[in-house]
Length: 442
Ligand code: GUN
Ligand code: ZN
Image (cartoon, rainbow, N blue to C red; front, side, top):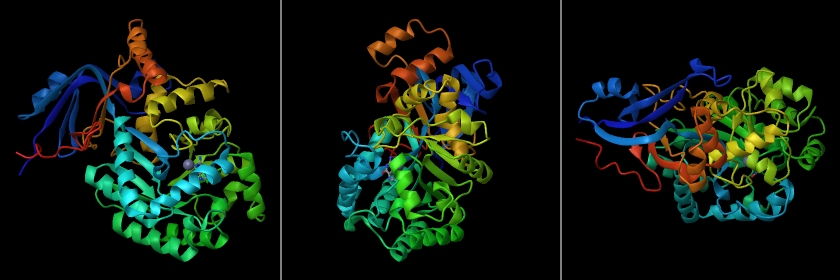
């Protein structure tokens, strides 16, 4: 049985490298009358419409003109059990965790709640144009099972893991070094590498893991070197002080993770705002990835991420929403706030670099740019369709836009889920709906 081809027509934009600026045309490929041909969940061809259409065999053609087709967005740090925490008032990190987040996460012990929230979570991601995310589940194995099961049902490329936390949290939200290890091993066995799923070993942060649990995390990483590692680093001054008190022998915050063997090129370190020169050296040497979470950093008053400083050291930074401390599921709104955080530091973020970041750039940080993040033939057919005239304000502003960079910047500053006209996941239209696979086979 062969499956039907789908041919998307529209303006196409895809990156082959990080653009230095608008004149760096070698870094991206923009086609005015472009097309993406998809079959069996994969991009068969993309580029000029006439050339691509000539390769199509009885393809179902969908005309998205005048919209812009890009690779689906990638969110590299988000908390799945915080869908009902987003927009909780008035606290900085540690109080916010204790007052809002931890109580809410206890509800994910219930498999029915986890399953219901997973469905809503993916509806939200897709509605905002995000086709891949790296997510924290709650401490409960059942929440990670729900997270992966729903992703598998939708054929989404997702990365995630249950948080390991055995102290400084309510009893209903703690595991033990042994149960954290056992549950993580079982989840890796059941999900990692199955379909489009990857596992991230997830000690939540130094404050909520004892040294005994860090040792177990070290064993997990050593036993599963192709899994990701995700945690939080140097987000907030009180958090750093508490960490230093809990791990007095560590040279600094990062040294807690480094000394337990967690720091490598598959490590994603959320926030990484208040870093010492030694920590920056260690991140660069390990090839680890700080994750910039601008809406969250502003919301919790955490601080300003030094993108240029880290990049200057050869570090590849990822970018993410960090919902529920983050205030939007939209990677467009994340770029909006990123632009402002970087403006405050004299680091103007050009829209071409911004859109590279939330597509191929995040894929590079994940080591997945051969699979996602571009419209290249042979990669997975996750595509977002963007409408830069989606709202009256955007429409009016677009009347005065005269370049691709203008259009991208309007999307970045004014766009959100309303600008996402459609999303394709593994070649199937998905926006706001369950994927309909019934028409696939012929
Ligand atoms: N540090 C540890 N856990 C969390 C979390 O859930 N959100 C944020 N922003 N920081 C954290
Ligand atoms: Zn986080």
